[in-house]
Figure (cartoon, rainbow, N blue to C red):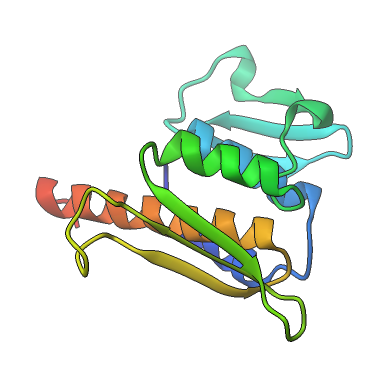
Length: 149
């Protein structure tokens, strides 16, 4: 899935939904490197550097889910990349900021890999952010076990 840190930082700073963020999220969860959003869609390439069709591909804007704007798209993403995990979203009463939590219910309380996102521009961004934080923690754990961390 690649390094999620840069994308997480962008989501933490997001002022609202953005097509560029949606393209970056799509790339991250599908194993691609984001190149750019060209207005018509997302330009991407394989993360491993191998080339196919000169290394660059394009997916049209209507094929990229609106992860940063749509709670439905954010929920579908969470359920796809963290199968069996639970999630919760809400909008705070003060300032209408999005909040979300994801956790693994199969683990003991206090050891369930819970990840939160608060004060986000939308509830959808909050859920995507909490989801990516959980994925990053899983990747960090795998690297540590493999001796790469």
